Amino acid sequence: MGKIPESELVLNKDGSVYHLNLLPKHLSDTIIAVGDPSRVYKISQYFDELEFEMNRREFITHIGTYRGKRLTVISTGMGTDNIEIFLTELDALANIDLKKREVKEKKRKLKIIRVGTSGALQEEIPLGTHLVSDHAVGLDTLMFFYNLPQEKHELETAAQLQEQVGLPFKPYVVRGSQSLLEKLGEGMVVGNTVTCPGFYAPQGRKIRLGLTYPKLLEKLCYFNNNGMWLTNFEMETAGYYAMGRMLGHEIISINAIIANRPRNRFSKNPAKIVDSLIRKVLDRI
Image (cartoon, rainbow, N blue to C red; front, side):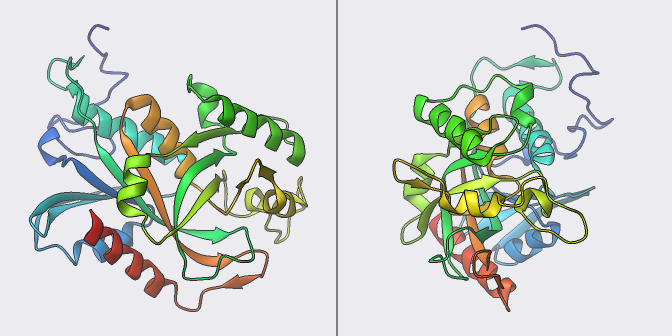
C-alpha cells in the first residue's frame, strides 16, 4: 500500500487526525471509551493527574494517570457510525506514519474498553447489573461496507436471527476480546449484546410512529442458538467488536444495566450504577 491521499485520511493543520483532533503522542496503550461526553469527566475525576484535554464535537478526550498507569478516556457519541470514525482515527494514530502517510510495518495493538449503559432483554437481569459482552449482534448496516471475517458459529447465529425476526438483511455477529473479558469481567454477568441503529423503533419502542417489527423485543428475548441468549441491547458494541477485529485491537464492552425492558422498569438512580462500574473498571485495568 502506497501513500494515503489527503482526501482519504484528512488531517488538521497541526497534523492531528480530523475528528478526534489528537496527535500520536496523545495515545496511551489502554483507552476507555464512553458514549456520553459528560462521562469523560466522571472517569477522569478519579485520575491521580490530568495531563491533557481536548474538546472536538462529541469527541472529548482526557489523558491522565490512574495508580501510575497512563490512560486515555474519549467520548464517542452514539451509534456505530461514530464508532467507525473513532476507531479508524485511533488506529491511524497508532499504525500510520501521519507525516509520510504510510502504514507502519510494525503494528501497535490497543486495548479499548467501552464503559456504557444498556437495557436488559431478559427478565432475570436486575437493574444495577454490570454486564460484560461476550458476543455482539449488529442490526446496523455498517458492516455492509467492510469485508468482516466471521467464524462459522457467528454466521450461523446471524442467519438464524434473520430468519426468526424476519429481517430483510443479515445481522453480523462478532466476539469481543476474551483476554479483556477474563481480566475485567470477574463477577459480572457475561452476555450477548444486540446493537441497534436507533433508540426508539430499532429497540422496539413505540411513541407516535408505528413499528415495522412490533414483536422485535419479544423475538430478541426468546432467541436462543445452542444456549446463546441475547441479554441486552444498546447502540455501539457490535461496531466496536467488528472494527476491532479487522484492525487488530483488543476491545471489550462493559455495560451498566439501567433498564429492564420485559419488566418495563428504568433505574431511579442510573448515575450511581454507572459510577460503580467506572470505579470497578479503573481498579481492574
